[in-house]
Length: 215
Image 1 (cartoon, helix red, strand yellow):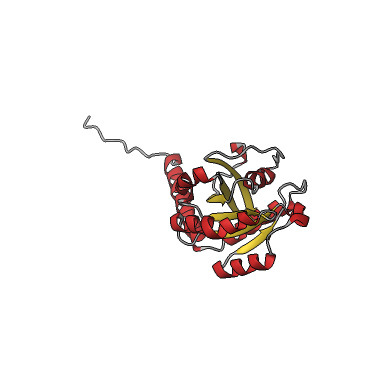
Image 2: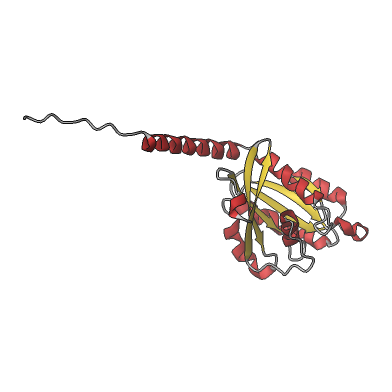
């Protein structure tokens, strides 16, 4: 992203995407950035990007981390979970195993390492292939009810980015309602006030008193 597009005073929100390799995490991010590539390469380790989102006059800079889904990289993913405020649990609706692994591995691994009160959101990707869907949505609903998360069904492949845009807009709305957002906003406002005071002090002309001479 062009740094000139980043507001000088946004609230930064570290957001991570986790899930098995091939579920479409990188494609979701690319679609959100308007750079979708149907031949995305597999993520190795992790990749990082950001985008500014404005909701209710609140400016949020999503700092988005795309983590690798291959089993051999799972042990190093933990370091990317720290200090995250939002986690997208992504599965492929055409692959039952990808959903089972969300339940059996990904959710727990993030929960053990991430920030307290992190926002989880389940994402069923590839609804353009709904005729090949393998995951019972009633099972998905039961799981979401159990762990207290919402679910979105999207298609990163669809040329119209509405699905993905709505998803991140919803995440922004959730984030600005949290105590963490209020805390970060308060710190930001205090820092802005300090800078304004410093600017005022440096712009005011200094009055130098003349000393009297004896002659």
